[in-house]
Amino acid sequence: MSGGPEVLVAGKWSVGEGAPITAIDPYTEKTLAAIPTASAGQVREAVAAARRATTEGAWARLSATDRSRLLHRVVDVLDRDRLLLADIVTAETGSPITLSTMLQVEPMLEHLAWYADAAARGPRGGYEQGLPLRGDVSTSILVREPIGVVAALTPYNAPLVTAAWKVGGALAAGCAAILLPSPRAALTSLAWARLVCEADLPEGAFSFLIGEAPVGQALTESEDVDMVTFTGSNAVGRQVMRQAAGTFKRLVLELGGKSPNIVLPGVDIDAVAGPSALRFLRNAGQTCGATTRTFVPRADYEEFVQATRDFLPSVVVGDPSDPRTVVGPLISAEHRERVEGYVDRALAAGGVLEAGGGRPAQEHGFFLNPTVIGGVTNDSEIARDELFGPVGVVIPYDDLDSAVAMANDSRYGLSANVWGPPPEAVKVARRIRSGTVNVNGGNGGLRPDAPFGGYRQSGIGREAGEEGFLEFFEPKQLQVPLR
Image 1 (tube, rainbow, N blue to C red):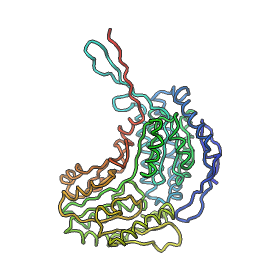
Image 2: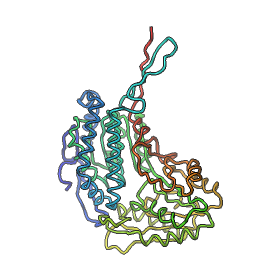
Image 3: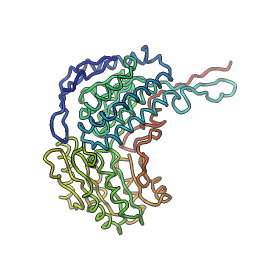
Image 4: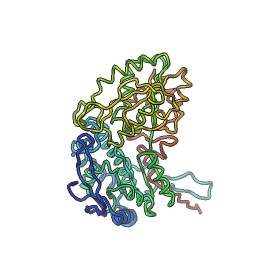
């Protein structure tokens, strides 16, 4: 079992009253736990407790300074058990331990600390700011108030940092947050929630539920939920949007990507082939911002492919608890079969297996080898759809304008990367229609003070930074006559 009660409502932990879900270790393929889910009644109780917290409870009466102190206490508790969190996310999702530490736990702590500081100072311009006089008739005050009850729906591939974005941002603003993680990251999120509770947040400020689609639907359709912030697939994002439409609640959706990686003419191919591969291999490709479409000058295509072939044998595929591992397992057998289907169809349609491919010789685990496909066009299925696996395509281009056009010819617009001399690469980066464009790898990671989100079908709204913080507020004008 999961080791105790799984549902947090009104400041109290209780056993889920719904049907259990099973957590599977994607490396050993063994059952980790059977976890009871929340019932419809428990969902209603969580929403009601959150509403009370925002209107009449101790949470609503807390000052911004006190909220900041509480959030810093949350950071301290989570930091104390950072190694435990990294181990759990590795066991449950197959994320390699180095990745679990560097790209899951550490950014989560950094972003929560940023929100803890933001709670004290307020959003850009402060919680209140005076507007210019309107002649000699009136004056106005712009007030930013917490939006209310926030349902935070997080994914399996990045459960910790997205919890920091959604729950941290909501609490910093003075909202009440209800966290519902992906069932495939339930144990990780449960451990995180139990640690958060050690900070003694006021009753109803933070609730935690485990459940599948019906639990999520109950939250997104509830009239007492004011905002839904969701990270996940486009298919589920569409469902969330439809469900939320009935009550016109605010939505922040961070969805899929099919991000471009452009190699400019004259670039040292040996220097960028390996890093380009790593950009779509990390977390076995289960990263929404993975740059899976690489565009290379036609004259450099063969050299780039050969350099990639030479690099891939150095990529360790295996036990995610081994610090040497770069590529761990995919989340499930079903998901692996889905990714393999894309590769098989691409090859059947005339694509070329340029490097890697197939399953490694592992006794267990939902593994796929790093795979590079060539001989496809930018409008092929494998270059259009998000696979969420360790698979990339390489496409040659004849001139820079065509490279940019192909990069932007996508239903998505989440991330991108450009390799080249910084002045020229920055010019190209400005032409890419994506929410984040890295130049020469970026090397900055997920900045807590910068927004994250995408254009087009990669989502609505932003997470993190001032833009992400503002999502949790409603602006109000107070207009006062001068006489």
